[in-house]
Image (cartoon, rainbow, N blue to C red; front, side, top):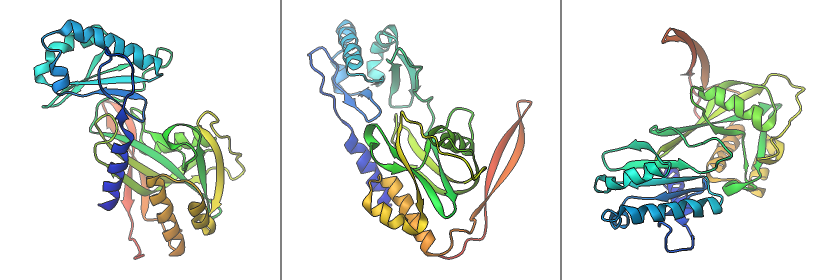
Length: 295
């Protein structure tokens, strides 16, 4: 419970009031994903009687966000503010999803890049690959953004129609250039409301190299550096380098497992299955628990 509270606190601190100039810009908040959020409330109520003024301010907001090289704009409306929905649609917004409390509109504003906004679900799912080889793990160092210079494992979001283990395998290939195979699940992180009003679940999948003679080819646009770290020296590396909160918890777990001499034991078996869905065979996996030793 302490970990979840700390993670939630760190997330809420990353939001800050956008410092845009000009009285015609709508008031909102910028998040760490370079998105601008305008939330339902009394502020938008002031435009109910004057939708044209709302349109004028909305157009200015889009221009300001583009000038700040932001990627997306999210706008919440409550039931009393639905008169503004038509104006949003006229300016290129689409209805992302609705709940009993709000209707959420979105617009991707980077014209040169295909929209990366997630479809609406209850959770955003991510996966990372923890590669074990000769008693070493592969760590990479972030190059840009909020996590710049932090050490982590290869990972990212699970794409539509992609399995978790497939996503982890793909991310390892994209970020480190390695061909790997999954064989276990080491850690699952579950966050409450996080990204675009969704929960966030992240799976750390244990991987082994398919070929021991592979050379690492990092994704230079996103990755600054990489390092194979011996588990026996992981505590020293962890103490002397920068890690985020979730990655810190992962490193602490790895250090604990290594000290307990239990790391070579498999806690889950990865059981592949095939299922016919809509006339097509689809692969899926069970993580089947094995008898776990007491640590």
